[in-house]
Length: 91
Image (cartoon, rainbow, N blue to C red):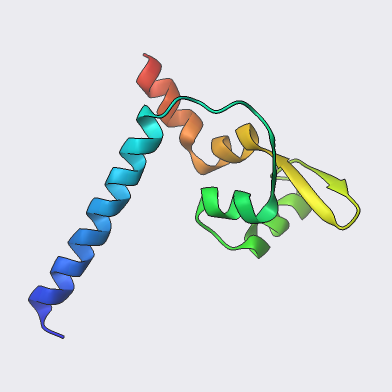
């Protein structure tokens, strides 16, 4: 693969990421609800295991129901950095 092609692909990924951030900033804040570990991992752009590790070390609060964990959407968004962006947008 040529260097130009690699650069073009990387720029496309960066542009897509910026568009996703822009959509999230301008979107209304959703109401708080309980979400699964998988949903939290998607929001935080990490693996399910990393979310479980954060729950076990106490850096993310979760409720256990049987074998499953449920997290607050607000807590996950705050951990992912959305709260900081929302505060900046309001000022």
